Length: 142
Image (cartoon, rainbow, N blue to C red; front, top):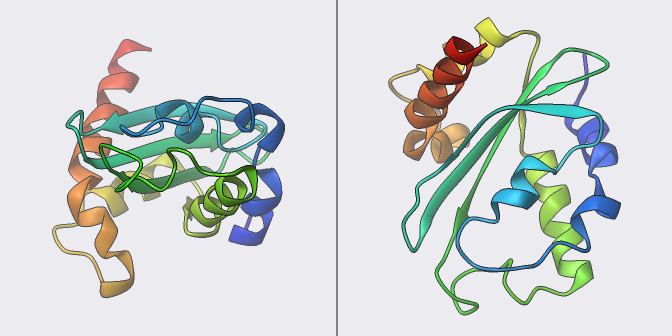
């Protein structure tokens, strides 16, 4: 099974580096974070500030990976906007390092459907149900 160090090595910097850096959720960067992966679901709170979460499948191992982040409305409260290349790469590696890895989609759904998260998983309180809904809606379309 992959580990978070493996995910850091998968950060697709060549793809992400030329993307525009704007406040508001950095959807393109979240969806394009990892090389050799397919986006299964993506959720953005859609407000001027809030949470964003993505679920991907690693194409080679078939493992499921989820990661989430927060965003602000301007360069003063969103670290991605106006970030240098070095800062942006560090943030991308941080997302990969903090991602959750599951053997299959069922394990991922079980995690996302928890009612309460441990203190080291508290960031999922704000977006787990929404990402799960996006994931389940995407499966209905297949």
